Structure formats: structure tokens, C-alpha cells
Length: 202
Image (cartoon, rainbow, N blue to C red; front, side, top):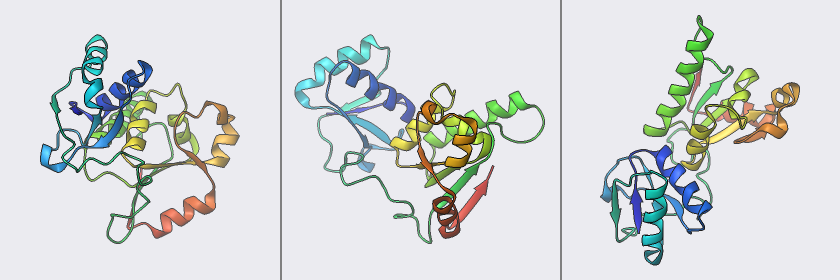
């Protein structure tokens, strides 16, 4: 069974709710033959359908549609390994670097709202970046208490690689607080940027 939701972030939250309730499920790309609502959906065994629907109903997570088959096109994320950087990007990867927890110059609070909105928008758009690189204050976006952490987890589920500057993480003393992403080093980050087809600096 495939459960389709209004957005990728809702699909990720639904997956968490089902797993918490002990219902086996997997987040999978939405087969093209079924549309392009949010890019991902949940796969649940037919025998678990009723229980899954009960849990989602109790969790106030509306399902847009359900399908009796995965159409042989839904492949579990991680089933053959996560998408490697640039594997399906002609000429190299699309890389976005984020060096602050705020977007633009001027009002800091407005900048934080804009950056959170930007990250959330990436969960709904295609094509997405292949890699997000976080420097300086940008690494704070990946801590457990960050308002952006759920959207970053959604992007990670969708195959976007998240690289965090290890020096920055250690300098701020937040290693134990990181909730998503890979703590990396300048060699790996520099190599990723140098091999990229495009690099956007926020």
C-alpha cells in the first residue's frame, strides 16, 4: 500500500508517527505514474493498512490518496544506498552553502524567518540541491532545538546530503546537540564544492 500526503514534510511526520506506533513502513519516492504531489510517500504492508489509517487519523495527519500497488516504481530510500552526490546531475552536483542562521542583510529576525522558509520550500521543489554545506553560524540550523531541523531531516530523507563544518561545530560546542547531517571537514567540503556543477552561497 502507498499512502500519499500533501507535502514531503507531512510524509516524514507520518512515518515517525507510524514507527512510534509500531507500524512497519518505509518512506519511498512517489512513482511518476501516480503524480507529483510531494515527491515521496509511505509504503505500508496491505495487512497493516487498517492500523496505519487508525494511527494517522488519531494523529490528525490526513492522507491525500492510497494505492493498492507501488507500481513497481517505488524504491525504498536507502534500499540501494542513498543517492550519491551528483550521480544523476549532469556535469556535477548542485551545492548550496549556508554560512548563517539568517538570510540576507538587515533585520536578523526577518532573515531567520526567510531562511527557514527557504529550507522548507526546498522540500517541495524539484530539482533540489544535491548538497547543503553549513559553515559558521549555519551549523546551528542542524541542532535538535532548531526550528529548521525537521525540514532538514525531510531533505535528508529525500536524498540531499547535509555537510556540517566540523571546526564550526566544535568551536560552538554543539556536537552533542546535532540532530541531522554529517559532521565533515574542510577537505571533503572543498572537494565537494570544487567538483560541483554549481555553487550557490547564501
